[in-house]
Length: 369
Image 1 (cartoon, rainbow, N blue to C red):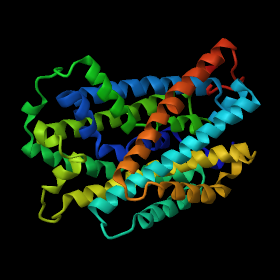
Image 2: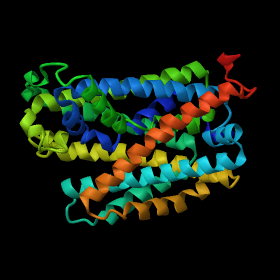
Image 3: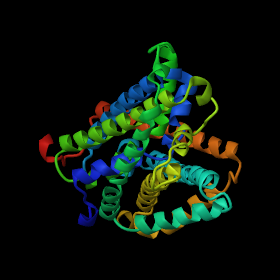
Image 4: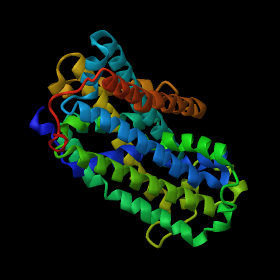
């Protein structure tokens, strides 16, 4: 592996946080409330636990093949032909998810900030930025993500203002929705915190002990889960149940009612910072897609040559729904549903195969000897 791609475990921590926080935060409270009602915050905690299980599965798989990316592991466990087919599936998944992120972002920005700007212009600007960053190596990406992570503190502080008008009686009675509805709400919550699957691609480039990698990714997932739970609690407490049924992006509606001496539109401040988190999520999937296609063309160390072409493809796909909100929502739903297969199902299957046929690498991380 190229030393320019190596990153520290601290940088991995910020990569995972930025990958998990993205477009889903805006409608998360609405989606979980629609199913689990006032117990939506419990659904979020259950979702975080489910994601943690998936993280452990991915870590166990990568730990058995510490110097191999996902694409290498597929070929080793499934054979060349089947491995290439599944690799193609991952390439399509990464590309389509990146396009869905672009489409949702363009819709939100057009609706709330730039109503007169064509959606394709908004998507083009993010695509151009993503291509510029992703043509660098993983270390460049990690440094960028580390720097912009400080903005998440601002997101936290801005949403805290909602506590002034929160009515926590809206959260009671706790558990009234029932176990099945809470689990159903957890599914919606899981879709909002995906991105941890980047470990499948970047694990070989992370320095340090294997146990340390698991700790950093787990800590990142814990913080994101708590942050999302916090935003759900504030939103549920701020809006009455009847109001929350009518606001698909409640956190923006809540912030729009706030005013500060310096900022008249706090929601625009929030969206400006949110835009950075969306960009990092987009970059992660564009980067993983470029790594995948570079592997298939036997040029793993030169992924940057494929980034502009993939970026153009993602941009074109993101334009398919146009300005139709239902089509954009459907595109996002398709990408989210695919994620269950590619981030949970396939890694679990590969882990089982590796144990059944006792396949693993001889090379291991320092603490695995």
